[in-house]
Image: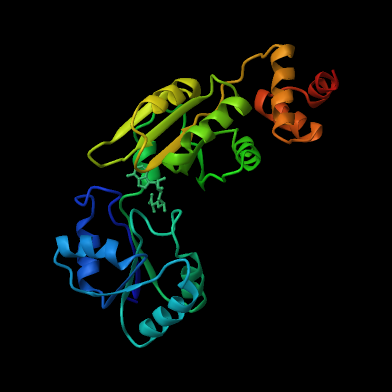
Length: 270
Ligand code: SAM
């Protein structure tokens, strides 16, 4: 059965980062469903693509899913693109994909740019493992919870420039000033930069340099080291100040430092 519906990756900044197959598909389909027609038209105009376009974003996805399914059932082909990168990676489309599967519609993925893979491929890592959490939650408590849950591995997340410093300060408070961080800014674009270092160095750097554009962040897996009892008590205190219960703070510290829960509990009681 030939494809009826395509998920097409588009550039994450540099308009040259699009595959030949993506261009062929976008030229040949009857319709392109996109997050924002104004953004996608810039790409389509550059490559002289004249397929019909309509919007499909998180606020109309349910209704657009019905439209797309009915178009495909009437013999048309449709491609989904997002504003940048791979659709459904921190982008809308999951409601639509569920409906397409329910309706046994053939889906073909046309892979290409994605900020996570571009970022990962540039980083020094001990192994292949990583966790991706999409956009990191805004509240300090939720940030600490999710980063603790992923602390067994390198953890990548997306963050906006106006919240980066607060998030890094929270990481420094919750996981230590020596936490290793990488920040990629404006990948594939004119002002691309990647900074790697202790969280305190990265905070200093971005407090004194331009902090605009798009960002991806990695919190490296912490190498276990023996913290002194005094340092562990300080960490418990910080977590309590952030609103964590003693029970949760004990759990977090014992996971992060590979320490016995009873030992941490006794320290907490001090
Ligand atoms: N679908 C996209 C992908 O494949 O990466 C991600 C879409 S998400 C709505 C947008 C976020 O991805 C940005 O806020 C930023 O955190 C990250 N991002 C996208 N492009 C980027 C770039 N060129 N450099 C760094 N981060 C980027």
